[in-house]
Length: 543
Image 1 (cartoon, rainbow, N blue to C red):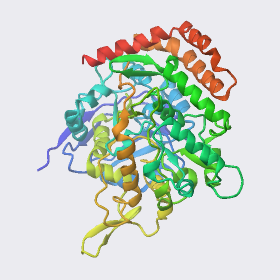
Image 2 (image 1 turned 90 degrees about the vertical axis):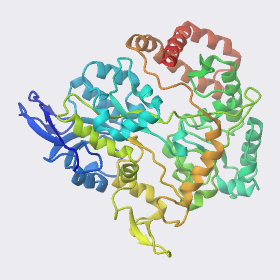
Image 3 (image 1 turned 120 degrees about the vertical axis):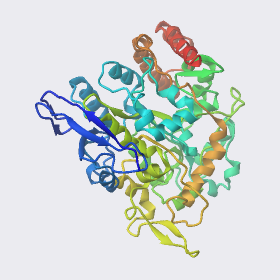
Image 4 (image 1 turned 120 degrees about the horizontal axis):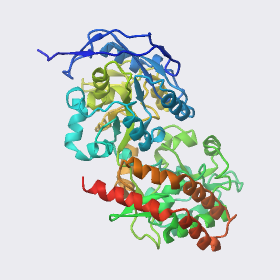
């Protein structure tokens, strides 16, 4: 017999029209009796149909209401949603307006660190707009609670200074979840043309420079023209972390090294990075349009076979090739330099906060928590990642008489990620979930759980990222007082750093002006800025 508990939720809400969420609330809402099944092995979650509102960023591949995964989950849980999913480019503005106006949906999902800053989470939680979840989690989110018990760092990382947990995180477990940024990729055809194997990829900044020169001068795209762009990016946002790491830095900004917090843009290592990158730019080894082009323009160059080293989540996103054709587009190997003889890369803490928040308007936080908690189980993660049977995948019998997964007949294998992004929201945004390893021995190349490409990605990551990854700075919430101090300095400081970096690299500002640059930063209060993070780190270490 499964355990049942009756939860009485009273939600009296003044009459407002939630235009941001698309749900009209009556002038008053009568008491509801919502019966919640707290035995996680069973569905539905509620006996009586429960309708809620949710806001999340949309990727544009499909409306959430039309996604088979969410339609199936509605049937399983007996919970339906009215979704508001503005485009990712508009989501930050919509989110801020929603909080400012008080027009709150019942749930906010998929925001993550990209759209919901730690300061926002602390502020809106302390104002009562977000509900604290720590007392509900043990009973209504047992899967997630188990993960926190197994790894106390999870609780430590998501608990705000007032002692509350206001959001559930995405927890990475697969090797690529350690990526702090998109990897850099080498164009495989170019390597083959120059007789360079995966094992012979550059390991030092000097070797990397030499290879870029060969890309520029030896016609690796084979068209007889000198149109090769050895290294490209958009705004240097994705290339920067990997080149910074070559000079011993894990972040452009605050990082911790052996318990000491420093600000990397004022270090000698950063100056060496600028000198090196300026050399690449001056010699046309780095795309001269790096600061002016969009990501779409970068991808266009990739599809025209014009670029040799480039960032993206997967290489074929830029090159336009298929997964199988991308098996020789090898991942960048960390570099060492005179300043950093030890290879290092920035690593993700594998915890993305702010992926699931319950607002004060929610009539049943308990049911909502249970709705999300399923995705922290292996079965639930597989469901939210791949959708229900018969859409992306189906079962078939192999030559051993066993039932194995294969991609559904109507799925274009070359574009299966786009197909997946249309059937589940688990595409390009962080969701409350734990990445449970799904990849096993390769028995069927058409098996979504064990594709050759997925195994290639994991092997490259295990060899080239995992051994060298270090988290720049722990996930630490600042107190309001600490955040106020940071806010008073950070905006102008960041703007100045970004502007000067572009000027130094492109040669607009000569590096002979380095001392003036340092004096300006010091005049902005950088020492006080560093001290805030040092004090926060010291307090965090005592928890």
